[in-house]
Image (tube, rainbow, N blue to C red; front, top):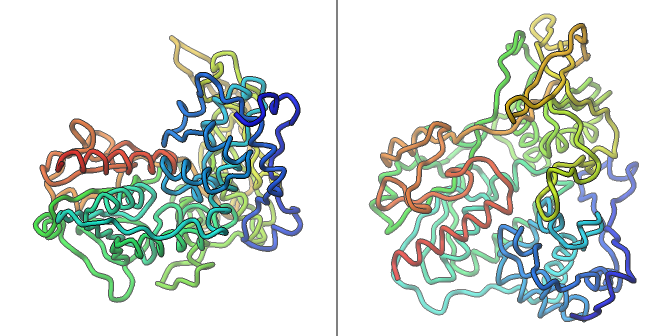
Length: 483
């Protein structure tokens, strides 16, 4: 432990953001960095607790105290080596992880946790700058071939670990480019896509083979349509050509809202909207219908991170007004008594996008959409109250509280329900649960002896860091199955 009293002498300091008036005019990353000396000072705040709850809360089991100490001492190489042992992609989690670890930091009991996520990002970027991150092909191949279907965070993670264990890995992706939700769901102002490309280049140099624009199975998968020259492969072909098949195809079916007026134009799923913007910035073509917020009254239904991303994107596109509504009550600003440390607290989150403009409304239920000439014109909404009945939360309408919100564009950011996978499930004779996720027995093994599943496709939509952890765990299970 570098400085036993560091947490007493140094206050938490976050990196902060570029000025609003500057960042609204581009899609570059909004978060800035601290100078190395200040970053090392933030690492000195780590107390090297006897029981590191940060490690307990982290899905990838990062050993935070150990690499915080290396960072404090200026040992960037040692910090990176410890970080890489647990997390294959800290450049992703360092940008988009909600930092479950910080909620469980001992200093977090007083709302002043160590800046673990930002320290992690500083380490990996310094490692790249110093040339420490280099391609490392396995010493020998074991003669086993694995096909991974889906190049999102879970699939990339599994490919990383299987390849390093000596397997010959081929990753199939239905979309034109690799990364899944990292590329097509998260806006560029949170995760610049050059960092995905940088990692893919490294993995290719290590021997992983990527097959983008290749759809496995005949069912609908991913966003939009196949590009010119795209290939469709029957799942049975992979089953016969590879020793094992791992499905990491995500949970991409968005929640719908069944209210009057849903048929009006101008009501768009959030992921479609965000994906279109990312594709436009990347210069992709393919017959996708443009959706823009320019000059429009935008309403985002859903108060989570995806909704926040829609707010930031709409403001950059030049929306006239942005309103984000949520049916749940406004969260408290500080940790509630029923969610004590070291548990993850449901508290109010104000993202960089929220700071850029817009109104947020809570306890608002969408009752219908009002249209004119087939286009949405307003939302019919009502206030609700929340209480607990038989130990469960219960929503009741507030009488006489109905009101309208003018809207030319409505973005549905209400999460995801199950996997879009009809074709590949049929090809491989897989069983699914009541939500459409791939059913696994034991850990990751499906009803087909040669097929495994990991990430959102087996457990439902979750965090990027959990998908990375699940991909690693699946890879470890597959390795044990052979050796």
